[in-house]
Image (cartoon, rainbow, N blue to C red; front, side, top):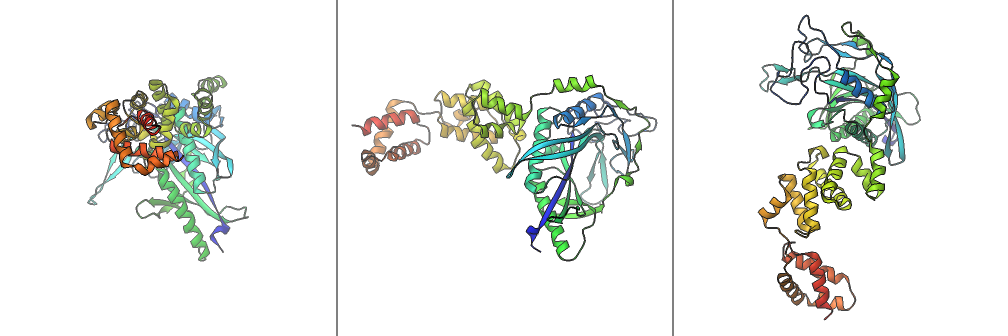
Amino acid sequence: MAREDYEVVIGLEVHSELSTKTKIFCSCPTEFGGEPNTHCCPVCMAMPGTLPVLNEKVVEYAVKAGIATNCEIAKNSKNDRKNYFYPDLPKAYQISQFDMPLCERGHVEIETENGPKTIRITRIHIEEDAGKLNHDEYGRGSFVDLNRAGVPLIEIVSEPDMRSKEEVEAYMRKLKSILEYIEVSDCKMQEGSLRADVNVSVRKKGEIKFGTRTEMKNMNSFRSIVRAVEYEANRQIDLIEAGGEVEQTTLRWDDISGKTFPMRDKEDAQDYRYFPDPDLVAIKISDEYVENIKNNLPELPESRKKRYIEEFKLPEYDAKLITASKYLSDLFENATKVCNNPKSVSNWIMSDITRILNEKEIEPDEIPFTAEQLGNLVVLIDKGTISTSIGKKVLTEMFENAEEPSKIIEKNGWVQISDEGAIKEVVMKVLEENAQSVADYKAGKDKALGYLVGQAMKATKGKANPGMLNKMFLEELKK
């Protein structure tokens, strides 16, 4: 049977660390980094006699996420103990939520090649993150760092509604965008703030029953997730075609080899022996509480896109791409405040900035320069201090060394030549050296002018004022 006769079925469990100042059950800081075991206390170290106290901000942020993803918010909820051997959680259980999560039955819309598609969200619940094991490179043992233990998470569980790696990436990017906009998570995947467990199964097209799924744990980059989905789907199809059976297994994705490896048999809910946490009171939420959060929700991507089209007159495609990322959107808005030229800022983001992000394989939140610096670059071009071609060089330099554009220009001697005498000299020389292009222009070939201007820009290393060049060339060619 051909590979195209199979259908891949994918569901995600997305874990997002919340941007609260303190942990979920104690007052330890949640900030990333720090020396090992400096952001922990007797509570998150599970010392005997300590008691957890729920951080109310965690509930607020989870409800925010639920409202933004069209979930129903539970008026009655609770915390449960999820029992499992966690070498990096001292309690040997995780405080999570089982049968009464805070948010249920939501959905988000994604764009696919076949148009919009709804991805259903089963539930969003709160839980604590685990610590981190640092394995000794010489194999002498492992060290535990509990700085991350107790950092609050929301887990967003989707229905198995995705049918391709492209839909998985679109869904992940949409969730990331929503969480950034409502300011409940910084979603820095490189710091583990956003990661996903990916459930994959395959079945023959036309079948209703799902195949046996495997789960790939803790994936924290879009590139890895896309590659892993493709590999695992193909592996399962090959296995079935060879007469084998897919086993329900938890897998580890190895990004270097591009393969999955078994970690353990996949657990089901009964394996975790859930029961209500006796140290924490039930969570009761009023209609007024939910309504207040809903009324104070920040502007979401769709609303911002519409505003950009109306207020800044951006094309719909530009507005859609920019607002897909809160970081790009904020960069656009704040740079526009500096230079008052939204179309120019949009062009820089849509072209050179997006290109460099793709080349470097980095996300918008890793852009090293500020919106003010981008705005200042546009101002320098608008004032004629530098040309657009020099601006491209400056921007490239800003990605390597986030200095003020004016300092980069001064350091490299890139100030635009606007002296009439100097430009006239270049124009006359180019005309003298390109007699054929002069003849072509006089014969009605307008493109020859662009070639002559290009030669002059090349001679001045992009520093000549293009407006003055055009004007001077036209004057000389009409003589």
